[in-house]
Image 1: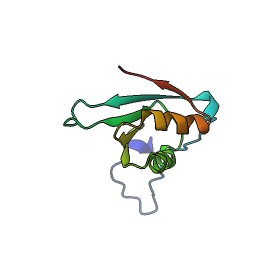
Image 2 (image 1 turned 120 degrees about the vertical axis):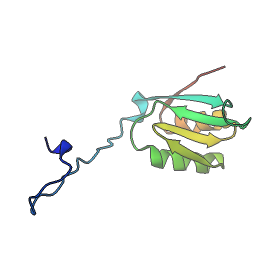
Image 3 (image 1 turned 135 degrees about the vertical axis):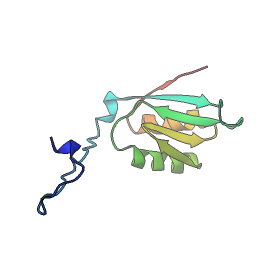
Image 4 (image 1 turned 90 degrees about the vertical axis):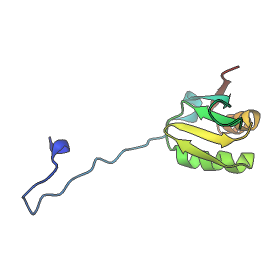
Length: 104
């Protein structure tokens, strides 16, 4: 019930935040969906890796380094600047993920 407390007059009360545990699932059980997006990006191509769980920040950094490009993590999606679908799929398969190309 402490989730809704905004203010307390008790001087000894401390808000205990629930730590989110990002337990990485075994990579062999996950399928990464890879697609290319251009809409809403002023004609620039962006490779999007979607539907993965676990620590995506580390995976995003490794993917950027492998593809030699910039990128970002937006929500649960990894975005890489440019068309790197084949390289991303190759890297993820080496890591033990299943990959599927989605989109047209």
